[in-house]
Amino acid sequence: MDCRTVEELASDYLEGALSADSRQAVDAHLPTCAVCTELLAGMSEVLGAGRVFPVYEPPPWLATRIIANTPRIARESWADTIASIWKWVVEPRMAMGIFTATLVLGWMGSIAGISPNWISVVRHPSGIYFGAHTLVDRAYDEAIRKYYRSPLVTEIQSRIEQLREIS
Amino acid sequence: MQTTDAELVKACLTGDHRAWETIVRQYNQRIYNLAYRFTGRFDEAEDLTQEIFLKVYRTLSSYRPESGALVTWMVRVGRNHMIDHYRKFKTERTHTESLEVEYDKAEENPARYSSPAQALEQRELSERVHRALQKISEDLREAVILRDLEEFTYEEIADMLMLPLGTVKSRINRGRAELARLLKKEG
Image (cartoon, rainbow over all chains, first blue to last red; front, top):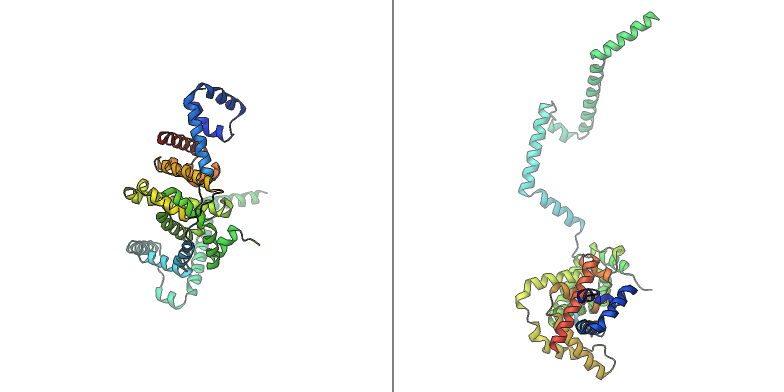
């Protein structure tokens, strides 16, 4: 074992965390190397100093000062959270984004034939539900109509009729 | 019945100021000593202790009892705060000049000695180690302080510093070796 390896293993050696083989190898190296022996003695002294390092009492007023200086309400309440979200919404960039998105959605809606009557929506919010209901009904009827009028379905129906007549 | 860390934190989060008072009184010595060991100055340690506790209070909701003891989490918060503090005031630090004054002040603080002769011997040894600690790099110093002075396990230190266990072990070993060389040089 060389000096570099001994230095790498020094803490494990001093803390008794080395395997038996490695410990034997270090033990065999130490009597032949004054530098490593001195290093390990020094490291052992450092370890010992850590154990006897004085523990100081903080000044008695310190805890009182900390407690007195701790703000009573430092954490966020629900009102703070809502206020912070509102602040975020009214930020120029966010407001511009919402405005642009509304404009684009309105434009796409007008192309698709959806144009809500805002005055009636405000007067009768339930109209949103009934309006959506009518829209879905209409879309369903249209889909059914298209299905029965499609050439493929018509062809299949006529074949079934022919088969019935044959039988 | 003793209140657990988790209960104390929970009470504190619901606005119970007495719970916070208990936390401060229970851990202020630990944080004060940690700050002193990092800075080597009592006045700086007092200010840092207060700053660390206020930071702990502000971030208390991020403490997870299942991830370890409250003191471990507090030491991690403290360590991060002290590193920020070091970076801000690196140029103003004059530890070696003030150590004598600091140790005179330490006399006023009753450290835990068993006899006067032993106290003198221990004081001399810890003074030498403390001087040497201020001379080694920040990475090695914090690893050695957490292990040898604060007596955290290697796993706890790895968790605190968010480093692999191998790196922590290597830093502690290198730190001890550097300290040993510095002590030898000092004679």
